[in-house]
Image (cartoon, rainbow, N blue to C red):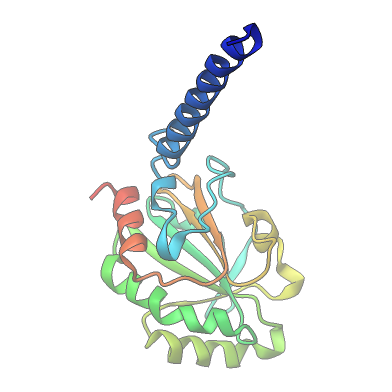
Length: 198
């Protein structure tokens, strides 16, 4: 065996072992203890994004059913699932019953689903009716017309609708999800329970 072969074969084996070790450790660290919320990014919540975790909830106002203004700070002390939706958005309407189911399952003094319609002002009454129908009357109506979309932009809902943003009881961003999901799924309930520390 020549000198080159004696060096090359062990070097190849060492490189192969290092590559295998790297692959094993990389796979096992995905969703690790570094971010306990990331481990729920599976199944229905596979696209859960925790990259903006720790940002404060925006202070921009939005309106309630009677037209008066409120902010997310009014709900401090509650874990919030804030959903931005519209009547012209089929995926938004598709996920609304599961958001209502999540509110029914976990709603109370420490948890609330806030569904904010982003419909135009002239479509507000229709949006009120659609939310009542889609949620079975479970979800309260909130509105941010396009001229008042600061709440949308400041929440990080930049990739379209629906977008759902989760805040902890201190008003700190936990995660967001662009696109529709089954919020009554095992993963979603597990995520909310973990945040509520149940």
